[in-house]
Image 1 (cartoon, rainbow, N blue to C red):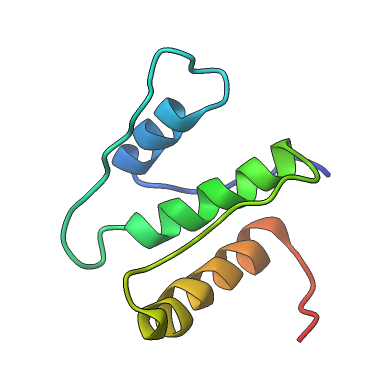
Image 2 (cartoon, rainbow, N blue to C red; image 1 turned 120 degrees about the vertical axis):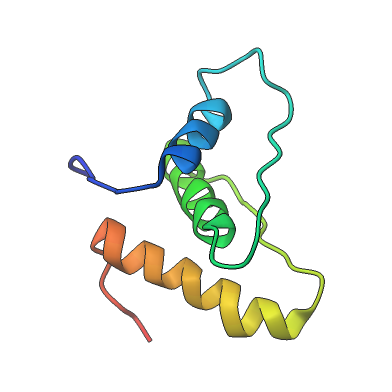
Length: 91
């Protein structure tokens, strides 16, 4: 896989740096804020990056309500996957 150029907000970049596999000092990352703050995007992006870095591993994305998971989070996950990683749709 070639290089991927993903544009994120500065707070998202900082969180991704803390979440980096190379960062052994940080044990928790708290990322919050209001609606449209990029939390779901960040979580989906991080899961995708981790699955690429750790081939064969399994990740989990969850929400408190399954309808929100289906209607928003999964939609965002596949948007990030398709737009950022140029993955062809199989659906």
